[in-house]
Length: 336
Ligand code: EPU
Image (cartoon, rainbow, N blue to C red; front, side):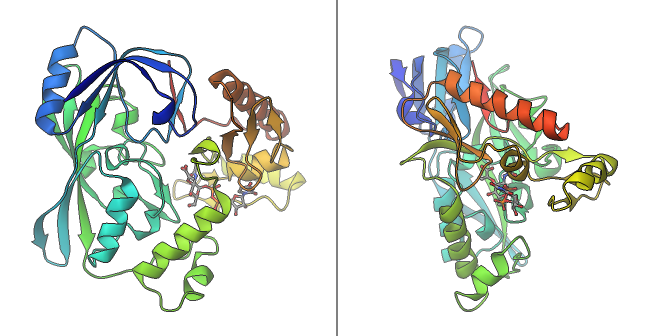
């Protein structure tokens, strides 16, 4: 366990926002997480940080930033056509996906190239190209901050939804996830109907998990800014879900609006399209900008403060609201 006081958070958030934490505790095992939580519980505020790829620090954090840097990808058992794998929260998400594809274990390949750590994957139920983390998660283990007791939740107990889970609702701010258990298939079943994924995979040759992974990574690289070059936290907003009536009304004046009907009768509209139509794609406000290749992503052009990002976020929301009557909800976790 490593404890540091007054730590700059700039290297630990992909938005590259300058903020400080009063302390940072790095834990290498579940035991260390328990020990750390017991030492601070009830005394100091705690914020759990994974890869820092979905947070916006609004100001300095007066409390302890706890990092569960638990390593290890362990095969637990084989059940029929599936393998159960337990993965440490600190494993880089894409290292796990690469490992799975290399070992002939399938289900996570569409989630290639997503930044962040495995421990964060259940929190917002990360998703891309028609697959979500919940499709491969078996259970989630961790420690509750309020009680300093370990917990384990099965998939059905996690209340997974679109970019949503129990960890963003009733357990928000109350858990350190230490391990995620996945259920991966021995048989590859391609999911390539999203957008232009099928032609991108077929252009590479056979429809294999390795080629799905390659196609997803190159599609992402073509659209999404590399946080090492341009600070960002991926999609800044969620794609809104509206009533079919509202979608029909908007489509009257915007017949080319992309719309994706959902099982519950609502319609999902791409926030990127709404933002682009509001004229914001590629535009800046101070040091913050709307990315020029994917309008759903806000970027730090270099020295943006959290205020710059928030001001841009509010300007974009106001214009989308006045043009379409839709409230965009940020997907990024605001801290402070
Ligand atoms: N679109 C535009 N202009 C834009 C961006 C998008 O018109 O600037 C429209 C287009 O019609 C496009 C559609 O939006 O066909 C969908 O775009 P895209 O495939 O890029 O996906 P998205 O809905 O914008 C979501 C996820 C991404 C994920 C992609 C691919 C959310 C909030 N975002 O974006 O996730 O990579 O699908 O599956 O659901 C992330 O969460 O950080 C993230 C990058």
